[in-house]
Length: 101
Image (cartoon, rainbow, N blue to C red; front, side):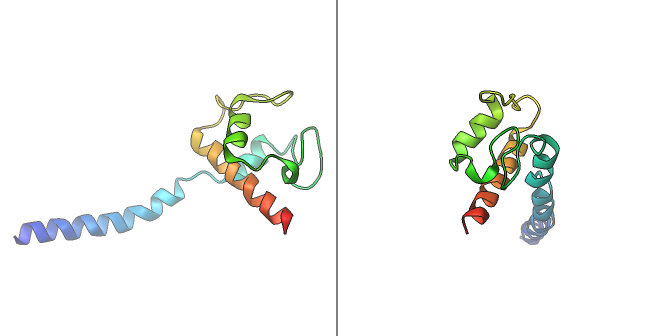
């Protein structure tokens, strides 16, 4: 019985220590945007591509557009991981909601 309790406590402690590292593994959407998107998109002004504030707000549309490209925008599905694309979508949505305020 002691062995089971010690094992359970060890697993619980390990999960508490490991949880913050999972959050740290998430890509930074702002950094990815700055590196891959900023040259054509700005938050509040039109550049080569539309400004973030006027982009479609649906996450599925944003993700599909980033992955497959659209009109003059190139595909990024082979350049960015799915997690990086999700982080950029979250960054775009966050900036759209701030623009609406």
